[in-house]
Image (cartoon, rainbow, N blue to C red; front, side, top):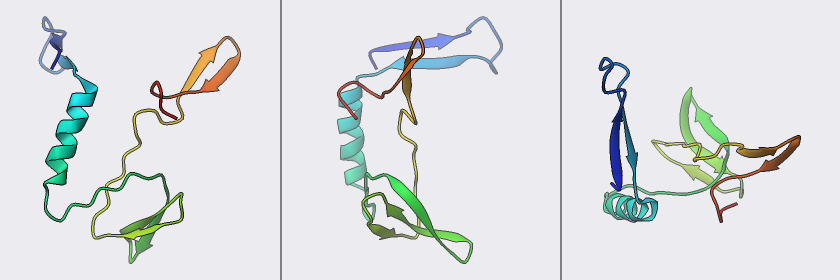
Length: 101
């Protein structure tokens, strides 16, 4: 961590909040290395268009590219910026992290 701080130290434990500033690229490399070593784990980065539901349970996903991925377990994440926008006056511009679509 580059910087660590505990917010609201003078208040009760229920409202104290740890905040960490981390090196994003170093953290990403470390997590990729850790997860790639997990036996039986397959990671796929894709936009999910639909869930494959059978018998009331999720059995896979269909991606925006049309691929069907079946699995016993599915972990979905929204990403950092879900429908992010920059507002300048009345102008709205879709936006996310710098140098990324």
